[in-house]
Image (cartoon, rainbow, N blue to C red; front, top):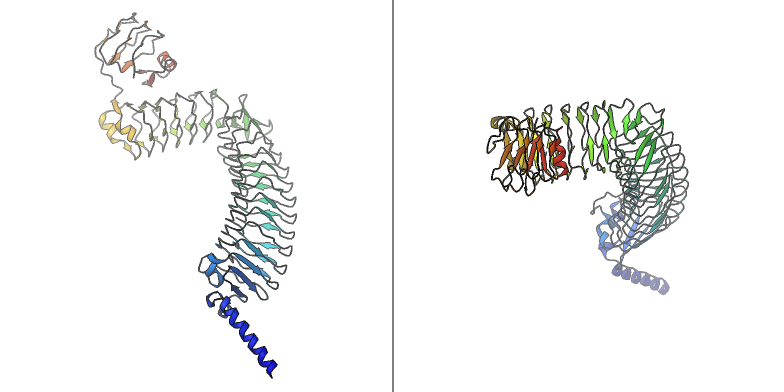
Length: 581
């Protein structure tokens, strides 16, 4: 009897001590009937979970019940044998959790289980696990390595998203698919082997893996998702298998170290911006089977010297300069970024979106056959100081000429709307000529054009005021407007004057001069030292202008025809030229 009583007292004492160690707030919450498992959390942050069967899923909110209410206090978790699954979001947001013990009885790990566990540095996943959900380790910024067990067939979306310290990961041969953003933002990941059984790589799967240097995509993969390897800035080499049929939008965009790529014969589709900003890419060949190339597929590839197209390709062609066209060569699709001087062939009707985007172009000739200039077609051509837009053009796309070095521009008569940001950030733009056909100027068409000081408008003041000028065009509103291309000269020169002799008007105090239409020669220092000279109209007949004709004159604008020698002279001597027809 005493023995029984002694035993009872010992048990009572043990229970009392247990309750002292484990406060009621941290004790087993199974009484709710929601979880089917027992759990305790001690004062040291050790969470112990035990029982038989599956763990129920949590939701992603912080107050999801059970131990999730104490997630900020959990430093270690031990799951006892008998538990067969880890429910979705079970440890999400446990930012002090440093270690987890998972038993061999567990076969599946749900969505987001360890997401946001920012103190977790490593974890052993038992070989019994065959299913790992989406976002399992997303945001585990100190996780350095992971081994995925054999039997797992897919790596879910966002599985290791933002694991900044992850340097290596072992993907088993059983895996056949890698979900979207699975390794996105794993900036320390230097190498990864994709198993031969993988057939698809999701959108953004390895984007922003900025330490990744090489990648072999196995045979069997037929498509690369959108931005799958974007901004892998150290990626120098990538092997694309013969099984590949499509390369997604922006798939390799921003791979700045990629010097070469071989596009397999089976590829039929190359997405928008697929190799854009691959600034070290030197050459590319489009195989015969490609029937679709998205806009700007090779834009901002500043070292690209040429794009070659297989002769038997039915959809595309290229010329001797390595410029990409449609088969009929009436649409210019993409110019190589290293191209500096180019005369667009006559017959081209359209310049496609991003065609010359971020190229090294210094001089371009656009033929009269062109009617449309696409979105961002010449945007960020940082060396382009002048461009003549032919009268045939009726459409100028958004951001088409956002070029910081462009000094002047003439809008053709056929244009009715100046599109959004068409000339934005043209910080060197001093003058613009606008025809009466323009009825609207969209938002930010001339935003950040801080040097814009003069506008030559073909119509009257009333017509100008009737134009719908949207927000963000303050430089245009504050510029001096000349209506009807009208000059008000300080004096009238004889209509028969053919030659301006040496120093003829040197030191004169006038501000505006209009030369007669028959003037052919402007002699040495003809207008030298004229302190107030701001505008001079030089006719198309003028064929000779002395190099020092305007010596000592600052802030001068030369007006004339777009095909005149006056324009050439102005460009050669750094003088602003405005075309007035």
